[in-house]
Image 1 (cartoon, one colour):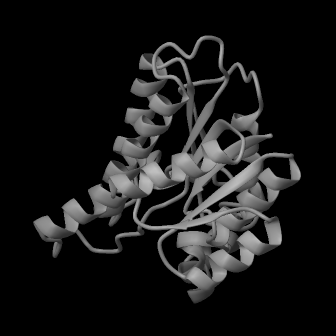
Image 2: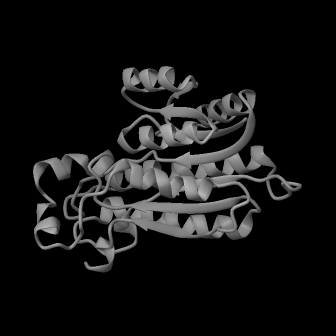
Length: 240
């Protein structure tokens, strides 16, 4: 059976992706940074490993890849790890900017690099593999106040296109919108985005399953799509 590494795979969006991947017959390898209890509960439910640590750390990346290789055929990588970085640019420090870049760009890109190398690098010799990076609609549309978070995520989108052109492994991006789980959950529950529904800007808030379906599409074996971005936001970024 093929394995799929899920960095950030135990959170609100990640758990839906993990369950969908397991249901499709893949072996998920859960990576998590916080909330060990939640991660271990999900891993027990799915009968899969869970690896703790920051993917910016080379040893954590190596452990994820080694665990995936030991449990089956190395096939997929989904990077859901990130930080909302809700800091206005007016008060942001250099440390704030670098921290967001480290979490939202550096860690994901380095894990993608290490995964591609483990899969076969530039040669691949007929192997099939898929990398899916999670960005945000804020990297696609222009949303005031989102600089510290959206700029590194926009860089991630551009990097994915470069890597898809440079490597033979497929590299694609899913860009979620306002979801009732994951990073946007707190804002949704506070009522911050209710106006989008009241003005019918979007028909509803997104669900974790919406993101999971998009990820599964890019993970399909022998998929003919690479270097693309699928924005899962109900059309919100088109109307801002």
